[in-house]
Image: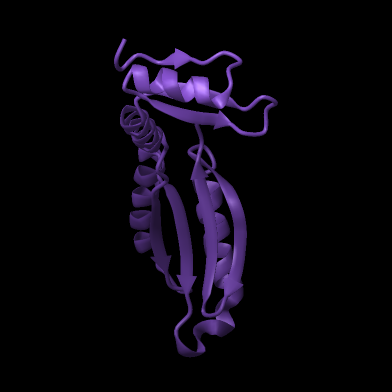
Length: 151
């Protein structure tokens, strides 16, 4: 029976410990709050190993979100816009989130409206591939917009 989990019924502590020693296993308290406390006779090292294995499995199955960035200037030309839009489409098709932003250098901050129009145009062009998570908002010298891929 070594290595096999054995449920301990309603026993006193001494009897449970002696049963665990007979089997050369450990007595592990599962729930202290229950009345009487719930304990199991198990191989504790194997128990820890299984827990670590489950944690790794859960972490491996967790979906990792990738965020790709595309940077524009407030006076981005049509050809440059189309080039970056195609890259944005590819990112969304791959399942990555898209962080599009307009960077304002120096005095170009006076063109905030151009930057917002550019980002809204991008959102409109990509509406069949992704949905806008956050509308364009100015943070310092950047106007940022997030787009998530549609499932």
